[in-house]
Image (tube, rainbow, N blue to C red; front, side, top):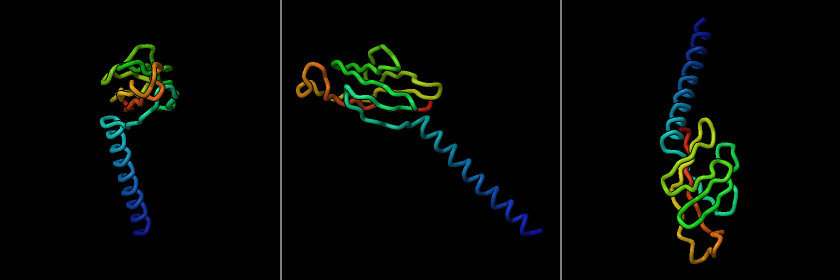
Length: 112
């Protein structure tokens, strides 16, 4: 019977470690988030949603999530547990031409 007790204890320890890892991952994804750099004119998959990225000057439109123009620091909810924040827009006006096709946008998505 001591072998059965050790097996249950091992399962409990592994379960506890797994639960702690899941909680830590949720906290990191919720607080820190995941950064992604996207080229203007392309599409990005964020939280299972495909977003078109359109840059005009210092504003970004995330097509598929919002029609509003977003500036650095603005956030938009793209799913029940997913928020995308505009972290940065590079200054590509000199090389991009009028449409801003080569501008790069830094996005950060979080769970909330």
